[in-house]
Length: 285
Image (cartoon, rainbow, N blue to C red; front, side, top):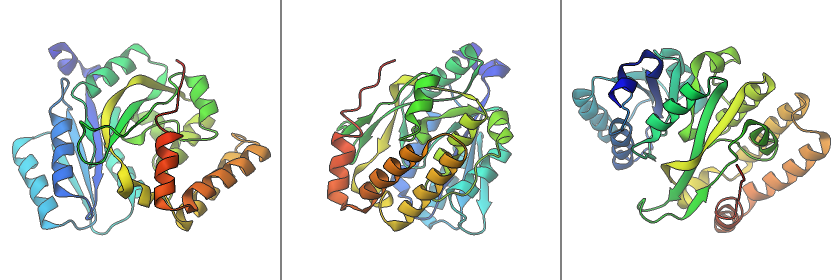
């Protein structure tokens, strides 16, 4: 374990963005899980996406006093996740960068497993993992999002759905920057980035186990519905079609299916996610 931490190849940054609507308790749990790892990060780059509440600022102050690895970047106004991550990624000191959301919880061995994987698979640009979703407490798992593990299967899978759980990924910064890095794209910043990486023939992988507890439930589903989401997804599908990632039939089927899911009621959307897009997903290695 100690050898990993002093080995320069194993140095890595963690990239997090937080904005004013985050819950201080959840934010504190997320940061604690980042630092209480079997392999601790060499730095944590935290981007404040606009002004925060006093409670959130207090959480940051507490961790800044305790953890010298924490670097805070403050944006004067809320610019959205894509721009916040673009700024934060530029500030990351190391080529290996792990993404983390400000309300989820890493499992204690997450970073060690991902760093080890990327050291052993130099051809892989980005590696994610499965997630276990919960609403109230992580001991009561409501759904599991399993994904394919191999590059070829992920490239096929991404025609229809996001091939990564964004909050779980670790990637090579130089490759991300080579395709333009994070860019604003309403609620789909990550999916847009993965498509650009795939178009440039970078290699994908997922570790076939859950390395993170993710907050799901109705709050998450509220963000995944409505006309703004439909418009954003239609823009992404147009990009996927124009770049040759999907054909015209796949474009049409995708547009219909995704639009229906975004526009149905929250309760019905919860049923679709839980019973069709989570627990019943079975992916072979």
